[in-house]
Image 1: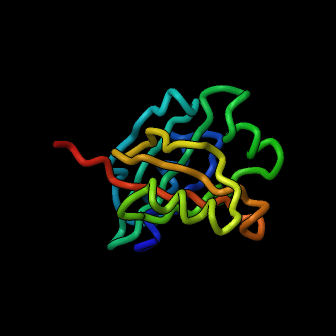
Image 2 (image 1 turned 60 degrees about the vertical axis):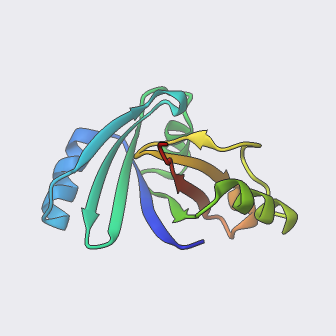
Length: 135
């Protein structure tokens, strides 16, 4: 794992939250993106080398909606950038971690992603992500 790629924050109202974080971070949202396969709208902020991803559910059955229903708005996950997501998934699996998918999924911000079950990481949902390389 190379570095923390971003911190994901679950929100009820993306537009209101974009306004809050633009004021808080003193920077504009650089990207919004619908990830329809995960039923989530996202918004990204960058300050220095750090990124924040805001996540709003687009369906009451989505993971984000269920998270907010159970825990309220707040930090949803920490994402780590990796060089090779398949190698890292195999390493984590061999170490006994439960992965939430058998293969990487297309995520937001040009990334392939996989999540590690929070029961294995002291209650913290961990995402590993790799930049999609276009040939």
